[in-house]
Amino acid sequence: MKDARRQRKSWLDGFMAYAWPLGLNEAQLREHIMQLDQRLYGLWDLGQNLVYGWAPAPHGLRLIVAPHVLLTEFVHGGGHAQTPEERARRAHLLDAVLAEPGPLPDAQLDALAAEFGLEPLALALPFAPEKGLGLELLAAIVARYGIRLVEDRAVILLDTVGFSLLTPLQQVVQLASLSCSVNAAYAKLLDREININFARTTTGDGFYIWNRMRGIEANVELYQLLQFILADNALARERALRPESVPRLRAGFHVGSHYEFYQSEGLNPTSFSYLVGQVTIELARMLDRALPGQILVGKFNTVMHEQTGGVSRRVNSMDFVDRARHPLKQLGGLALGGAEIDEIACYLTGRRDAQEQFGVSEFEINDKHGLAHRVYNAKINIHRRHGEPIYLGLREEDLQSFAAPL
Image (cartoon, rainbow, N blue to C red; front, side, top):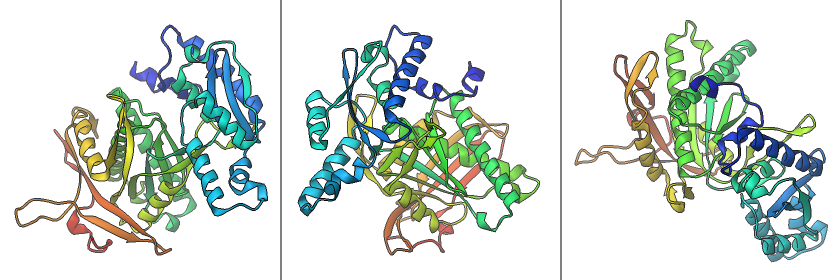
């Protein structure tokens, strides 16, 4: 079973992580995915059009489909003069629509189409969409043909120290090593039935990595993935005959808003998404000032959905790291470098007070544009039964050359 989960996957397999309706076998589900995807592909018109909103119908979907230039033309009124208030209203309306991951109520879909000056399009399907795919899976498939605004998803940035000083051959070897560490970490979590539906995109000297699934649990799983990527990288550096063959990393973890979209690849939308937005900008600015080997967690305070109980609640950086400790304890028994893990401790560092208690230090980074970014310094300690501990990140006392704490 474990070996089967590690097999190569096609773009279709990426949708298997989503829940699907009872009574369907995998062959039927795959057929339904392909039938819907083929119809959406025809409307997409090689990337000319996007799906802006959708709603299920008894035998298909109702869609708002329009050229991608509508994204800017709608806000600015197609070049016509507008009041600032009207532009702000339109921008807010568009963001609210792009932030909606699921179907729209029929009345809202009709109202949105009227705002755009369009008529909803009827897309016929040979199956009832909710019974043939389910709303969660429908949303994931339709998302390939649109753009979504996401507020609550965590993103990792891994950055290679001194990358620009390497020869091209050394650069490709280090990127291959980092990619291997990402895959090895993913395989470790699969062994514990933690099936992260993760995506990544290169920055040239590292990767942005995120979980396609959303919510508190999905973000915690991504934090777990970060622990094992860094641990595998640390072990690879220990074993390397030549130090330049394995990268030394800086790592950032943050939650914030971004747009998610699918570029064209050949004549198809890519099977993996790209991110652009505030969270990727903040991560890049954070790591511009990070020290070699440092792990930074951005300061956030965001509403996240919780699958257990189906509620949403506000989570800040310190709450999140505290919550991430408990699942990590359940990973004891996994092996790293041939030695079983006894304990994984992750925490935000701080100074010791007069009562010998540790607080949490908050730092402010000023970037090259003069903008301030609030961050925390993170540590991860992995204790192994018959092996040396693996210490990841920097201690508070190692941060003299880092930004001053607030």
